[in-house]
Length: 209
Image (cartoon, rainbow, N blue to C red):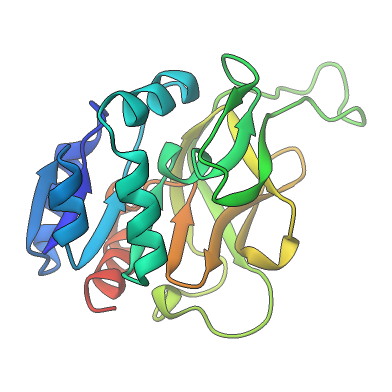
């Protein structure tokens, strides 16, 4: 069973449908005990960091997520589900995150070297190219070529304290971390459920992990 954690996020149903499409046995839940019983855990998220973090705390989900990670079961974070794993975020704050991955969440800033008349829109929204980063082979990227395009919607991005956890990078006014891996945890800034073939392949790899 795959527990998709419900924090009143707007993309829950699309994540649920995408996981089911690639063979996942999926349940949407905000029940800590269901998360503890699950074989795999997915934390999707859209919206604002502070509200999302408070939603986790208000539903008593923090302890269950920490236990899920500590247990070694496959754990997937998507968008805010990536960001909330970090120490804190500039959005609505600073606001404290779960502190499971050392580092910070910061807002995109216009590059100083960019000409004044050159557009630089925030949020970073739409299709962009990701590049493999770091050493070794990432199982969830099996069958996903370097340079593939995925779908983003975000104004903030993560800055891991340990660059070695970064497995995908993207460029938007400079390189930023698009996905991380640490032990049984994989989390991405983009939306695999909106990324068509590439995203479905990532989710299929997760279901089979």
